[in-house]
Length: 272
Image (cartoon, rainbow, N blue to C red; front, side, top):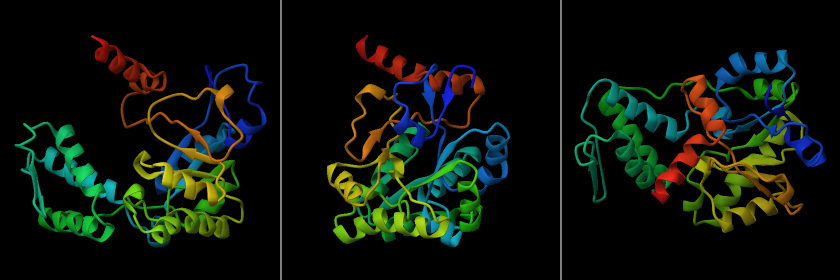
């Protein structure tokens, strides 16, 4: 708050040129209950607006998104020094092949699974959870709690209906369901218009963008660790905006990440 002016997306569309400090929007994804339990009281206390993008399936059934389940598998094996391997339809990868580089190994598995159909992807994850005797338990916000958030200056957006790998959806009906049905159902529950969508894992393409445009969204959010030039934001919808991904790390690292220190460092390394 000292160095930034915290605003909402609604304010962004109204006051593009009138900020004394760089504007910043707090944006959250998925709909975890800990936002309601911990973050919302702080935001309310300091009268700060924010945005939270909901996965309908999580709110409907208290289910965990597949990427978090994958994270849990990796964390469990890494923390317990367990061998981990994935073998599906000719694909065979393990931590040894990745030279014990967990980040590299995770990236390989993530991109492979994201190309699979939803049912096949979830089966691979469920089989691995059963093999390791771990469960996919995580408390998500209910629709009642999401609606309550919307009354406290939290702009509710969509994070797709089921957090599927959106670009991999070849069927137009399935793609429309993830994008448009998500919007319609959220609006029904919170009794407010939904104008924001954040694509799962920041994955999209022009075909996806067109469905988003037809569905009536005003803002399309990506996570690519870049800032936005307000002067270049056009009135054509959806307005595409970058976000900086903050993870569970020290406050000092978060500050550096917000200032794009890591991105600038990677760019410098690329020129050396």
